[in-house]
View 1 (spheres, rainbow, N blue to C red):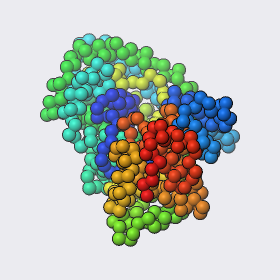
View 2: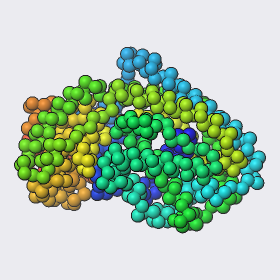
View 3: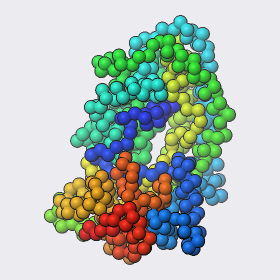
View 4: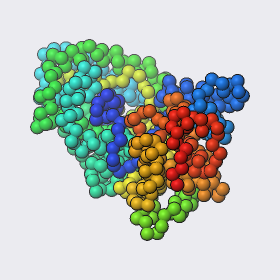
Length: 576
């Protein structure tokens, strides 16, 4: 893509967090996530709290240190810290420290690619600013076409803080569109659900191919509206897919970003939708957007941030190389998968509708260390070439095209780099895709199989929930423990995980409690049995830790019994 990573996709997706269509909500659909936990580096305020608690975990065993803790905090300490459960923030923090060999590998194989890409982006930025500056004298009298005006308006309502009321109107008008519903579904259930929701009845590969064709169609439409090539989608993973190569599951997230952004722009620009008429943005106001933004000041400093960007890529990539599994670890996990599957099947009768589904479901492995390095190297090469091509495309922009580009960049440019070109993904993204009946394992499950055994069993639990009628009484019981049905689906999958781990903990290294892991990553680590946040579909980490401990017949500390009694008296009721 030319400017799309900064102009359209990333700027808009970040900005649309305030829009109704982009808010996370529970939606019935095709894919269910165990967790989508952000890396600690992405939650700086939370990270400090998590680090503090992680440090306390090893230094709060004495009564003097526990006197000021709540019952929930004492429960977390007694149930999780005392049993040496993994702290996710600590795991991520430790991964930031590369070995000498890893540092040498990065310096020799990735650092040159990163430098080339950063330099190319700096040159692209400087060339764009120079070209816009040359045309700026013509902006006062410039006339733009209706398509260009609609394109600017489309970006404006999605990113400008003064357009909040118009956003509500527009989203109301678009609420019935399939891609809006698919995007809402994706917020909870991942990119694969986005594609298969848009193309109901198609498997993921078929749906992805169809959407790529749609993206390329919209690319040409947007470029035509801009009166110049401001987008070039045929690079990176999309081009490799067109060439017949397989897109990694992790790459689908970026593709879904591009798809949603471009579909949203197209829908807002559509004259037949009556939406452009809802947007009161005059030509004079468009000129003011560029005039007030100080685009030169926003983008000119990119060169001074070169070192920051280089350091950021090194930090993120070395962390991922420490955490992503190696090919041999994936092979070992595949053997574990079959043992877990066998145990899950033992919970079902051969006549149960879920039996055949569990038996045939495919478990997809995460991106490995080896594949990630190749993917990053190729993507960096693509981006560097793309930036160089973008410079040559500038000469095709006339005054109106330059004004359109300048105005859009004024609304969407990010001042500071916050990631390494969105190449590194450290989310915990285990998921069950109930349309394809496939399961995606994350790096955590493979890298830390003592947790992965239970997480995989949890994902199989979603298939049982979807296709079996044998556990309805347990589901009703689980809803009673919470007082609502919001968390029932995930709580039920935890029950299956607990049953499987209870049977396998002596034959497989699956003794760890993933509830403790997720509790360590929460904003107030460990400390509520009942979660107050109504926008999530998962129970609190502490609640999940208690359920798994109970199912594994582990001793429940008195502090946990007290916390349950204070916050959720039915939390320790049995539902077997």
